[in-house]
Image 1 (cartoon, rainbow over the protein chains, first blue to last red):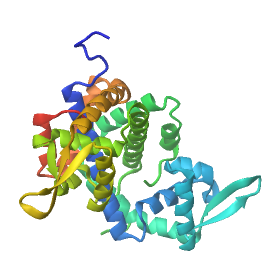
Image 2: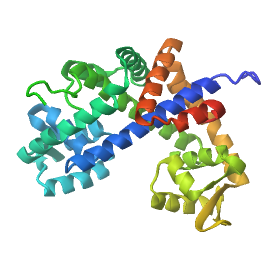
Image 3: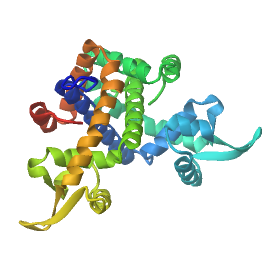
Image 4: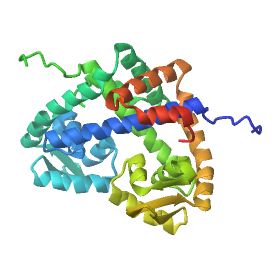
Length: 169
Length: 169
């Protein structure tokens, strides 16, 4: 690689945009998590689990699929599910077709807690995210995010699935 | 609030963009953190601390300012700094003008580790982020992020400071 060319390094301006993007997204998530916790009995971890289950067929997921869906290690998920089960938000049963597997079910109380928590949460998403952006800015963000996702994950299964079934976040 | 109007709730399309944005950003961060750890001896937590110190006046920050800069609780920061001090990446000294305060200094080894870790990290930022986007998409993302940040933090001190001094991420 030629000296001084610094190929494949971001420019100062590209880095400035990168840092603003990452830090602003983190600030936004922190604000939303603080509100979720103060407005409902749900942590953001609870919310993610309940969201994934509420969107699953028969509101049930194999624990391995749930771990992938929420992006956690299985041990972290398992500890968190034990606490949620004590609060009767979810229920775990052995898989019928896999002696090592566990199915995770949304309980009625879990569904109701999610439904109630999601209303203030979605209002916060509107207030902190949607309200901040003009329609052009929202479309510009969407175009950039779609390009990023396709670059990271060319099969793009997550995005295309949600484009059909998009629900609460 | 009128029944059925659901004012201040995101539309289905706005929610779809929101979820794609948050999930894609998380995927991108996870990929970058995995690379950083495999390509250097630094965790992403180490990297954030070293980055903040390397940009500070005389590469030194009061621990309270460092906690704010990296967005952690002080107890988490304190535990992490103890581990970094054992590895001689940083050094802590009592503040001269505050009996309760601690100054955190970047050591020569910390500066060198950061410099070496930042080269592959910045290449990864280029490959996974910059390469994904056309100049128009990058500009669209920048406009959206700037609007989001101004909405969240109208004083906007972080952004404007970095526009002057933007360095490594």
